[in-house]
Image (cartoon, rainbow, N blue to C red):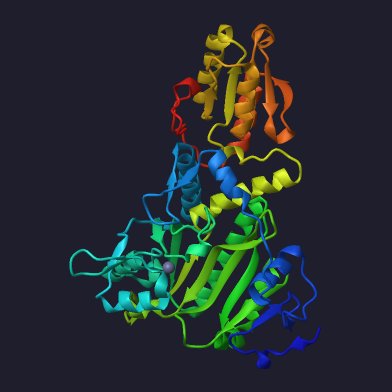
Length: 470
Ligand SMILES: [Zn+2]
């Protein structure tokens, strides 16, 4: 492998940067693990591997999470009650992470006037993937990210240097006219929810500092859920030469080779833009989280802050989605479940995301009252619990609970009532039945979901009372 010197880099080319500071041509680079090799193959080497249809689409249907909306455009999904509950939990989670670092939530409009020069300019950079809305003679663009609304808000208000870094956040439904052939389930819809965070900083050095913090946070968030991101750094040529040590620091932080794409100077509003790629159950990379440094839009949108000496200055803005779109966040969890299935385990969602966390199954009508009392106690402890009170066989009830990926199944019969102990099938343990007390069950579930958002069930706790869409 021959090294490339920094002087030799050219726009429009890919390079591999290793933590020891060496640059290589992608074709010659032999290192990196499987995840990195697949990123390299897809992005830099143009190797197109054949992939099967992503299993997440099958799960999306089987679990009754979402359906393609035939009355809308392709890539527009309708979420059913279970999918809505999960999406809301993911949004709650995203918001909690942003609040932890001081983000200020807002809700802005979804459409912007294309006659306004700043909007038009920005939209032109975005290109053909816009949705346009034309009431009578005017023309609006549906937002493809939350930048417009947040920028417009910040322009209207006085900003002091003391307010910086200022973090502003919106869970924004966004619209992008993706190519028809690329539209795919939760991986690439045309309407999606973006947890869009912008960080206003005083100047480039402080932006670079905040960038490092966000970079670390994104990597940590992936690790927390059990996946490693493989990263593509899009870097403007001049920035790469002037701030090579900064880029190298990021690569060292991730502790593995990174793929670098050099972009011509002066062409975009950003100087560095990192795409964090998740590797799915078939080894295919898909970008999810992202962070970039924007040096052009504060001027374009006339956003200023007032410095110590009173002079008005243009801030440098970070754009970031710490978890990528909410759809891709869910896609990651479903693909993680597919990985479990690949390993011969029972696929499941983390307990905090499971629509039903505990299901109680009375073996017959005789145990219905006892079972319902259990339900009340579990529900009052802040756990999503339901009861299969239908008049069907025990084996069918257990099969349905398995199909619903319920993490804890409690079967109640004569033995349980007499002994006051519960027989709990734990999905994570392959459905093995473990005997425990009610308190032990509650403690165990609470332990697993602590630190994550909670919402109550979005549908009846009695299975007999649920319409087909649940
Ligand atoms: Zn933005």
